[in-house]
Amino acid sequence: MKIYIDGKDITNEQLTEWKRKRVKKVFKVLNYKSAEINNPDKMSEKLAEIKIGYSYQEMYNELESKLKLSEIIMRMGAALSGNRRKFSQTEIYLDGITAEEASKGIDNLMLNQSLENNRVNLSACPDHYALRPLGKNELEVIETTGNSPLPVQFFIVFDDERGLQTPRDYSYEFQSVGVARLKDHTVIGGVRHQFKDTKTGIKVKLSVEFPVLAPTSIIKSHQMHLACEFSYWLQWIKNQKNNDISSLN
Image (spheres, rainbow, N blue to C red):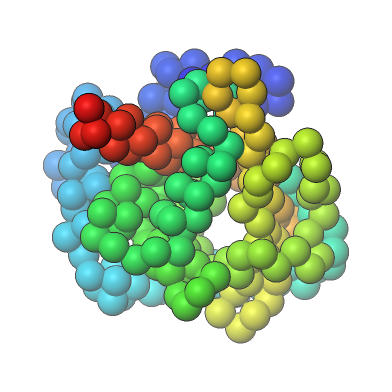
């Protein structure tokens, strides 16, 4: 797997260091007092265990005051930004999987509720608190975007492209696209994640749109957020494919 941000190769060490800092931040948010673990993988595993132990309502209650404050801030930022956007973008290359397999795998994780999908989604990035499918094509997300001081709750309606400014690249056959809204339906941005085949695997072009008044530091950090979650998701999808093949042999 290769990850690129602004044309620069992101190393495993860089991603691990970003994850380590974010895990410690989330430990504090959830009032977990034993954040002395130094192994990033074990820290991530422990954090995932803690989050999985919460019901959705318990997690919402834990974060409610922060979510209400971030909602006010996001609503104001969206109103003052109008249709102007900033873009957080990351590219990933992965061998041994097709664009169709990757796209269908992501759709499954985003839109099908199961214990396994919940575990994978909460493990994919330290800043994920809840990813909850609602109906046919809607996902509720509670997460911290970039290095924001507060988590935010929003709702992505997939296959809705109204107002998105990230252009469709038709050389990418598959995409995961949707508009992001607050609870009161205020549009705060959206996503356009595009997948295409290469000779040995896939190239994925990830893009998240934010209101233009979002601090640049959040945009930059969210590029690492995208690298973290999608590298985990794509590797998991590839592993599932390989496990299925092995079971047939």
